[in-house]
Amino acid sequence: MRTVHTIAELRAQVATWRRAGERVAFVPTMGNLHRGHIHLVERARERAPRTVASVFVNPTQFGPNEDYAGYPRTLEDDARQLAAIGLDVLFAPTVAEMYPRPLDEMTQVAVPELSGVLCGASRPIHFRGVATVVSKLFNMVQPDVALFGEKDWQQLIVIRRLVADLDFPIEIVGVPTVREADGLALSSRNGYLTAEERAIAPVLYATLTACAERVRAGERDYERLADEAKARLSAAGFRPDYFEIRRAHDLRLPADGGADLRILAAAWLGRARLIDNLAV
Ligand code: PAF
Image (cartoon, rainbow, N blue to C red; front, side, top):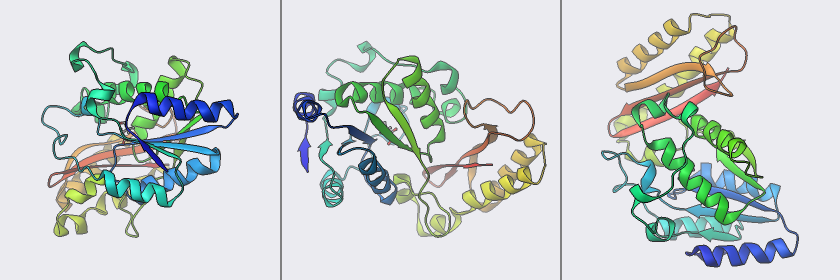
């Protein structure tokens, strides 16, 4: 595996593969890799002979009071794990390489219809930061296919829309969430949990599962189901941000029936903001 830190090195490497007619799969990450990320890269390797992953803690997707400064940076360990599973190139740029001008002077990419709800309601600049950095990474790597975890369902839908609206010739693949044995979705932010909070954390998945079962059984009062779910989370020690039943493909409120639904939730547990979601 080669680690490159500049856009020029990355482009030169990808160009040699292109000349040889090889397809390229891409997995963007913010590092601090866990089994969920490794699973994504393994799925990427099944889809193309060449794979690129990026590790970049993107400042533009963190709000002013969020955990950008403290977000875990573990590049050496990330590189070791990626090399062990046969990644071709790890792209690990600096902030100056990605954003050479002051951030507020740079071109940004917004996906307005999908970015103001759910996570976007409490993190107003988040998806603009994600859409901007992912667009830049797509232009740098120019992959045939890019893979994203379904744990960030809203992010996946935002990226699908971005690719459709801006005509990126890239196939976007969502990869099912990897979970601990007790159901907790793997996340870098699980590392913020104390032992006591870690024991409570699976209640989020259990609450999603219970709600999905009730929807499958025919319940259609989604507001009541969400209120009951939030009450259960609060009773367990969470501070719920949202718990909502939405149309899976466009995140709109379900107009009729129980088809194409996704249940999405975010809740604080101590200093960790956990997100998860489930198909109905
Ligand atoms: O999901 C993430 O880790 C990030 O939002 C991403 C897609 C790498 C963009 O910074």
